[in-house]
Image 1: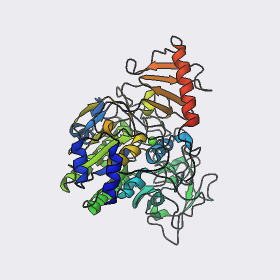
Image 2: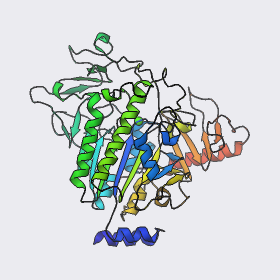
Image 3: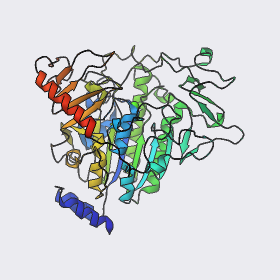
Image 4: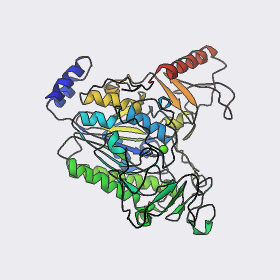
Length: 497
Ligand code: CA
């Protein structure tokens, strides 16, 4: 009952279409699933124009849903981008929201509102499967005991995750806060400063490697792949990269099966195409683009199988599925896996300039497709939207309120394709630096070691960001610079509640 009262109060001031309100008041809250790939570029999907690679699973969501051409994450790297998605805050509001080592403490304040907590408040069962990379524990984790705080304290009833990324230790899975498969007589230890005595490393033992680093990745060798950081023990718990995709898929499918009769929220973090790119043997050589292309095919297969399971359980009609990526693409990201040599004509960032870590549009303009057959008309939307706004928007959709001041804005009608009014401005984080988007303009200030001049682009007319208009329009540069600084000063300051 409270749910309905909240809902009505919330909707009073908002223009929610009556059919939508009617359906929700009939207590048919949609299930919500966010499938978030890791480093998948705007141009990596055939529905976004890729010619040399076909992604029928992801394309199916586009055919049956709404494909956005101007959707953004807040940052061009994983941790800050995912931090914004889950907390509704700009990443700079938390100085720890930078690419984290695998033994970093949880960076989300467990007292604060999060997207999964909003879903729990609305009566949803919540789950997280796959990539995490938001830190775990208090900074001194004993991996052999319950890891606290973690996904549960952020708002997930169920979780099956990797602590950080594929390329860094600990290389084990964590289910509901417990390392999976760890044995008392072989405890796991992790260190990011020095190696454990007698353990081989990528740097000292190249003869043991099946994949060689190009940069970094000189730490522990797990499954023949050198990683960042050092670990020892926990041998039986070590993951096998080639089985990871199917394992995450099965856990995601299990979550669907167990919760099909309740409203549920699932965050399914695909680990591809982040490095190391080690696909299952079924996908080796299938893309003709080397491991990076092969793992994209593998990720797409996962999406396809996941959608089939939704069909089998008759969940498709009233489930809001969001397929997206946490940041732009990258080719060589620290392993010699021929990503650059074999890319050919393929353009991972599509028409855009820039990559993962950069402030150009390819860094943060990501694939973003929503499907909800009961409510969303299939098509294409050119409205500017941001992942950070899902928190406020899904709160409105599910009739929830919160008291904290967030950077997340309600753009629900844009996400549902019912309005062309999305976000009017966005601060974009590269790596340690920022750019500012206002309407169709992007202003990129100078940054030591990267650029000495101001840059100004009209992104709709100049998607490749070739034509720097800063000298022609200094007033606009000044105005945008002042506004960005104002936003960074005033917006989303974290206060304790
Ligand atoms: Ca990423």
